[in-house]
Length: 332
Ligand code: ACO
Image 1 (cartoon, helix red, strand yellow):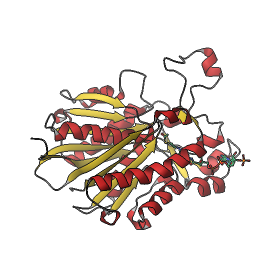
Image 2 (image 1 turned 60 degrees about the vertical axis):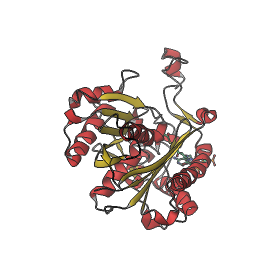
Image 3 (image 1 turned 120 degrees about the horizontal axis):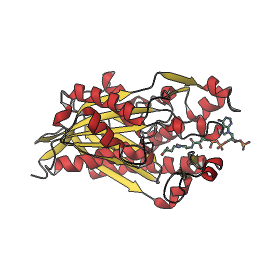
Image 4 (image 1 turned 135 degrees about the horizontal axis):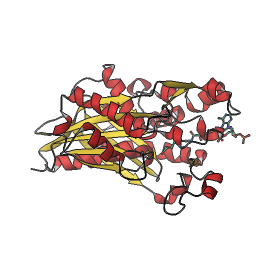
């Protein structure tokens, strides 16, 4: 069976909160300005989730659109994976909450924690189940509500992030030229300290002291993460292409993790790709962590950017440190 089955994306969906926070809005809260944020990151505005909603609520909206797009009923799903670092609770998984609300009664469900690479880690994991023939249909979601864990008084991080969710339906298809052709995942835990949220886990449980020390906020050494990102985005892309026996010229569209326009530009340069082969939306949404890649994929697909048979290259990096890439032939 293995070898004849491929994991094919048959539906996409996304959800963005209604509330828009512009750079000028942030300049009223911290010592920053629109010009600094735009020139250093490319971001103009981001979305922030309403207080009474959580990550699973965004997952549900994105999932329903992806299921509708694929023409699949939730009851037919065999597997649900959510890539997130801002689950509703420490446990159970957000995937289980989604499974229940979608009434996807036969689906196994679990979360993947790989920072901004979470969606790609989830996509590659789901693809393995489909390619082996164990499951036929999977839902993979990337969703994060980083607004809940940002220190809104820290200008070096609060300007960068936004909330959102993106989802894809994957189906196992036999003897097809379309679908996921190859993938690559990397990790280097020696960089765990560069981007993390130390409070609330077993090493540093929530106490009055941990809250007073701000340990429940995202911490990042931006410059180091920047250098890592520039190196690994290009590496991941080249690694996947080589594995598939393809080269840069074969790439029709690059869908990179949307953290910083300068990082995206560096990846384009490394791959020697013209700027019309990349889809970016970070000017509108900022860095949505795990949601960045699937939201960009859904937006570009719905804008009619892809043609059937196009080669798409998805690449990301994130906390862990982690990074990865997926090459796929668009089937819709
Ligand atoms: N407004 C104005 N000034 C600022 C701001 C701000 N919002 N933030 C920092 N500055 C100041 C700094 O204090 C510093 O001032 P100083 O020179 O007087 O000390 C100056 O601007 C330069 O700061 P740098 O940190 O050197 O700025 P840099 O050019 O490196 O850009 C940035 C910072 C945008 C964070 C960049 O390093 C970056 O994008 N890093 C990667 C971050 C990233 O991708 N994170 C996502 C990881 S994925 C995940 O898993 C969540």
